[in-house]
Amino acid sequence: MSLEAKKRSRGEALAEAFFYKMDRELLESLRMRIDRAERVKSFEACTGIRDPRIIEGLVDAGLDLSTITAFLYAPAVFVAWADGQADEREQEAIRLALPQKGVSQDAVACFISHSLFRDPPSKDLWNLWESFSVSFLDSFPPQDRDSLIREIVELCYLVARSSGGVWGMGSISPRETKVIQQVLEALHRRPKQESNVA
Image (cartoon, rainbow, N blue to C red; front, side, top):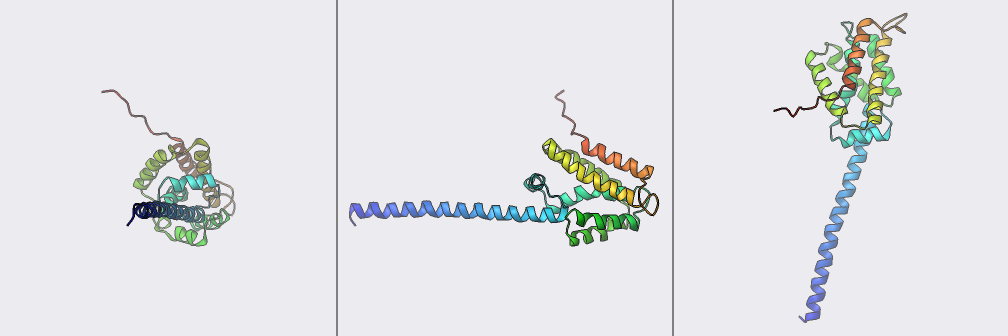
């Protein structure tokens, strides 16, 4: 093989190796974008949140959908049980409200049929939710954090209003008010700073 032929052969091998690697990287990048887009759609369907910045922030946080769902909806369960029982009107309020927010019917059915509506939530669940909320929300920009808090609190008030007053509309019990206040305090709490004292 002549020197020119060897150069050409090596050049072709170099170009092939370079573009092969580049094609693999492009394909991997495309796959990651498609996976992310699918996760965004899933998060939208299960949470009802439509603000793209918030949904993308949730997806980018690297948490799975069940964790995000628990974070968003556990407070509604706490409010539903504030008076000692989660009655049918509270469950119905959730069943009707979540689809209006864009949550899929399957997700709503799963949520309503969950044992959290048969048995009161434990203190451990509250502690886990509170601890997660404080650390998780600290990583969000203030505007997105406020939007998430608004989503959670709106659902809490909807559940609280559903079982009080005349024909189940309009009145929030003192216990429900107290639980909503505790939820708000937890959502606005920032992590404690570590002290550098030796």
